[in-house]
Length: 264
Ligand SMILES: C[C@](O)(C/N=c1/sc2cccc3c2n1CCC3)C(=O)N1CCN(c2cccc3cnccc23)CC1
Image (cartoon, rainbow, N blue to C red):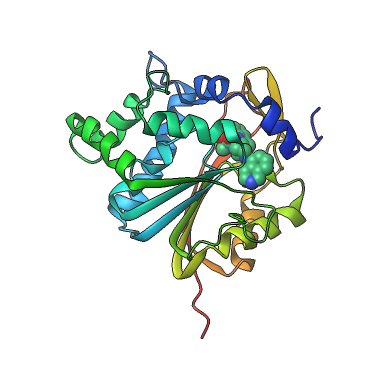
């Protein structure tokens, strides 16, 4: 299967949010496991972007949210409205379960506590959860291979677009990757921000027993695609040796913040 692109239909049929969440986002009991370190890296970089560096605005659109909400824990205090999106119904349903406090929704309390600790008060994690729930206003279908990824909806350009671990799974080759970056970049207003979390140097990742395609990307490839999509890269950071081989052959994870050039 390695190397065969995983089409959108396969995601709809075979992507199990529950398996995926258990594999990647269950803080293990003994601290310092590889997966904890990886999630902590993501949470630290979102904290730096939104809480420390002060990226903020009216609307934030998250592209390819998957079944997760960790990516909103820092941005929920910096935007009036967050729009979560994903291609597959089951991922959007998983997010809605958490928003409604459904008893069998995934437990994000460990991640909530970790971000509250970064913000200086670990006890505020329940309020943080309510803040995330009140800020995520819509959960929409997206398809990054479409010129308008939110079609048929037409949504006003956003102050910020974030996308974590999505494009490398959704794009079958570099041409598609460049096009997808242009597509999601069109959702950002001039002067607005694009925040990417990218898995580098791998061909697949696991979710439960299923193997899914990952486009092999290097840091330089991502940087040039972001620049060509009309953005200036403000800063970026690579975490080496991030993935345990059980889950993916990806080597590193890459966090990048860019700003959309204002055409003069
Ligand atoms: C984010 C995610 O959780 C996937 N997570 C993870 S964990 C991990 C660990 C190591 C490597 C990698 C990795 N990845 C994906 C990237 C590679 C998810 O569920 N995804 C992303 C991809 N997505 C789409 C598929 C097909 C077409 C799409 C069209 N438009 C929009 C989205 C589309 C479906 C939902």
